[in-house]
Image (spheres, rainbow, N blue to C red):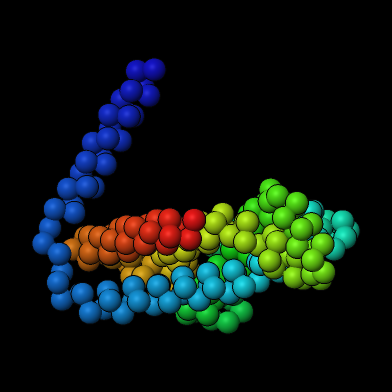
Length: 229
């Protein structure tokens, strides 16, 4: 116990010495480069999120047990979603960097694939808790299979889906920062270079930019979700 206490004290002291490095004047000349790299991170986030949402919606309809055309289709779709999300973004990013080279396309593909696995499951769970009596009423008016899902099921699940989609943007923004560490584009590469070279004047600007972007996205998502609900 005494040894663990000493290790904790030494660790806290090391953390304090590390944090003191941030008490420097930021490198304001780095702002143009920071803006370009951070805009690339935002583009990766938006493109990957939109692609994953577009692919996840039809997969979720096939995976949800109450709206899938057949139970076998539901099992196959759920199995596919499990396979997709089995590997984290960094592993997929390394695969696509090896296949397509360094840059943003590898990051977009990696995040899109992993996001499809998670969003397909979350969307399917949102569809499975809807009131199917509404869908039966729409069907009683002569609506087809697709119309029942479009007008009787999706509107009920839409608030949960929108909330999950907005959370996806938040998650992908942070994931895009990490993917830059393996050369998949964005601000992550600059962040790891600044850390290795002890450029805390640049590292502080990068951290502040990431924090402000996530804070702005959080406030925006709250307003959008409240309006839709």
